[in-house]
View 1 (tube, each protein chain N blue to C red):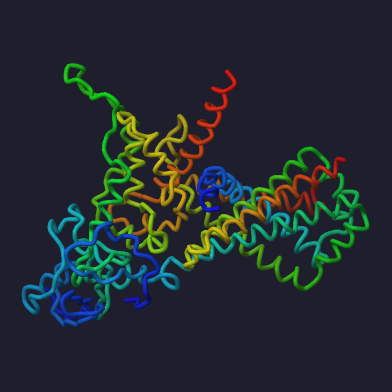
View 2: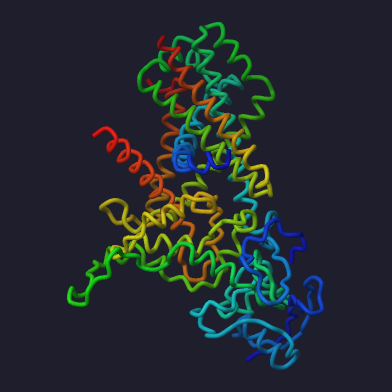
Length: 249
Length: 121
Length: 147
């Protein structure tokens, strides 16, 4: 393996000492097949044990290691060091409060996430004797793409609406809500659509498409949200007709 | 005002998406032929003469196309400009700017309907 | 890394955590780098949609007022302000529509009604074809070269 060195300009923030985040540079040897995460782990293990960053699976499944690399939200375990020049800037995800160094506050995301009821909502639980629910491959394909989300939050870091509208539920959570609305086993669409049409719901999205651009799992949250908008327009119109029809009858 | 806009959001978004499609397809023709062709005198004077334009505009298909190309893009543009304003940090004045954008679209749409109605009147 | 202050704290939890946090920063490349300028320019093209619709309303209104008013309106179009506007509007609207059509497949579900979605390239080619066909046929017809 050929050895070269690169300088990593890493954001540091110690809540006990620092007023605001600052940067620290580390010049380290890198291997050709490294990902950005490998470089951060090298820094932590060999150079500066005080560096804090989140990671776990190293294979783009757990969604822990999202950071801004040269200003672009990236899953660092999937982002080759060879894509970058001699200097690489690594910062915590934008749009999130920073707990320490490269670690961001997740609780706000979790709250938004729960708001869309991301589980199967049914009026009556299906009894075991009734057997399994059958779903055709086409019915599965209607939502499968939107269920591939690993909650890495890159989409929130890239979204210009998230940085402007405090109530915006955001790409991953809205896409997941749409995923359940599309599921034939689910009956929760009316409840979710009320949330979708409320402040910070699907109509706050201005289709910057950044979420889909940065998504490492090709979930396409922007597409999910546009589909949810259309569905809400139709549902809204339908509810109007039904209500009016009810009065007339 | 923000509550009202939130309530009407589905219909506004419907008009907005229709406006992008219709405006994006039809308005370039108008801009190219009447705006540029007429403005630079590149189009034959007879083609844009009153008799022909009046006949085209009062034809049922012509009137329908005109209505669509006048009213819908106003909503497309209004919604885009409102969101651009929010993106540039204007959320605090969203109530005012949104009302202004949609107000222009609403009044413009009514004038557009009236303008076509007059042709037939 | 951007040093500008955040406008809102969207991702702040309802109850603050046990430790102090640094405030969030907006996306590092927003608004002037990466894909953001194109997105903002796309939104700004809304102005072309609105103004051109208003100019068209003016045209129909003038036709309704009779021949003299229509001729005055045509006279107005050769004013430099209108000429500059229409050059910008034509470029802006064309770019706007083609970008819209390029993004269109991303918004479409796996099934559109009873049909499976066509390949992205087919959708884009179809929409581009629609745009250029309407532009060509519309221009020839309105310009008096057809019929």
